[in-house]
Image 1 (tube, rainbow, N blue to C red):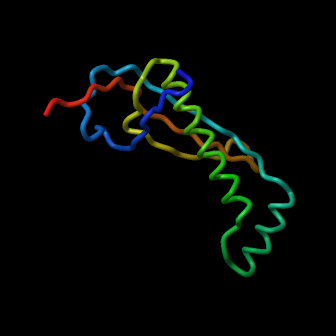
Image 2: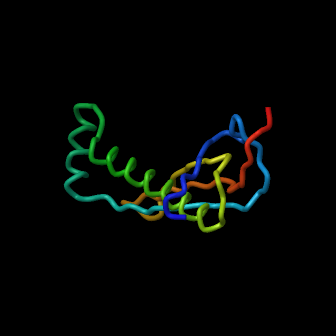
Length: 113
């Protein structure tokens, strides 16, 4: 089961497959805290403009972690895919960000031609 590949898509269907069973809702969250060194870079960037690379990296790492958690939850349910996948973010307390992702875990079967 560890090696099973799970398809994750924002679409409600997967070309070439049909949903044979809806398994359930799956989700994942990651809460990240800022680092004072990154804040200094951010202050400078607000003065001169440009991307705040440390925060971009932190956000992207959190998104990847959320997708991994969604996939793990789908595997636990015996799913083949997660459809209708969505992500969002929120501030939990000042200086933190929560990234969350959710979708519908399903079992698939190949469409007959």
